[in-house]
Length: 392
View 1 (spheres, rainbow, N blue to C red):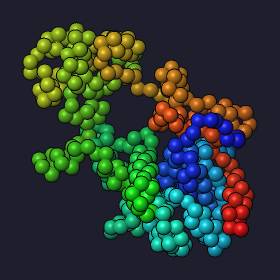
View 2 (cartoon, helix red, strand yellow):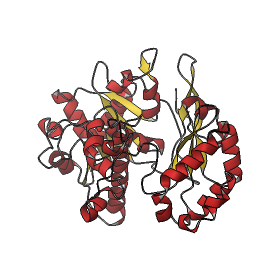
View 3 (tube, rainbow, N blue to C red):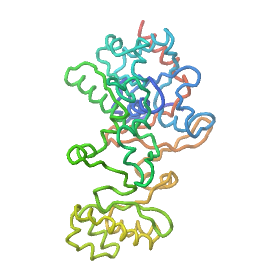
View 4 (cartoon, one colour):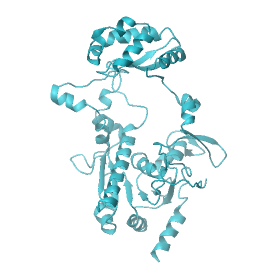
């Protein structure tokens, strides 16, 4: 698929990104740049390329995930274990604004492609380094995956039901959190370089720190009061009422009536005016003390109706409510469609496929999908020819 021309400008047009590494954390960060117009060159090893090409569901031997995460990137095949491959990477890095990598710390240094070397060639280079434990500290040399980071960062301990072992979320959230921190850090460094006369710098992102960074009040509650947050199932601890409730048809609905006015509207909608007017329940601290009672009242009400009726009643009452969407629900949803979040594309063999739309929505310079994830080495000749032309 060739790029789609458009008169709409892209906000990162002119920014050059070199992507090294594989799978999720580094490549997803680079994907965010690519979606908003950066020229992203993805370096892949010879043979199979990025292992993500073979992850999860495949279509004619290529992962459907690949087409999403690698859209708008240029694939270049180079052997970083060879002098020639490393030499080309060094030349590409010399003209890049941002380099993204997610190797184990020390790997690039072993290949002669570390920060000291590349920044000497290109003082303005911004190097995003994503690893399990960061570039420093006693664990820096250990291999790190998102699953381990989610455990060390505190997320797994509080995820699941209290009478069962901790569970994971259905996606590699540790990787994507680290990717977004990496992209944000790179853009801040780019702003500093362009607006404050600064030089390039390293953006050091540890997977476990990316997870820990979104753990809300976990640490201050422990340090100040010795409170260790536990698993609470589908409820929101310390904030009431907010939970998942079963409906008559066996489906589950999420209801959040944890604002003072919201709570009153919710209780009135389910026919419990006695609770709506109870002064002891007027504010969150009082509701938390009687959370089980409130959950039982809400659950008894939802059990009388099918999910569509529950949603209809509570939406009319302006109470936050929602069914738990599957992929099929998402694909059929009119709001997703209206927001441009269901992009339809055609693969090379004519197979139609939906891709997630691009987030966030910029009013003047929105991101877009210019082409899908490329074949292995599809842009090698183009990129190397351009590199040779510039060296003449």
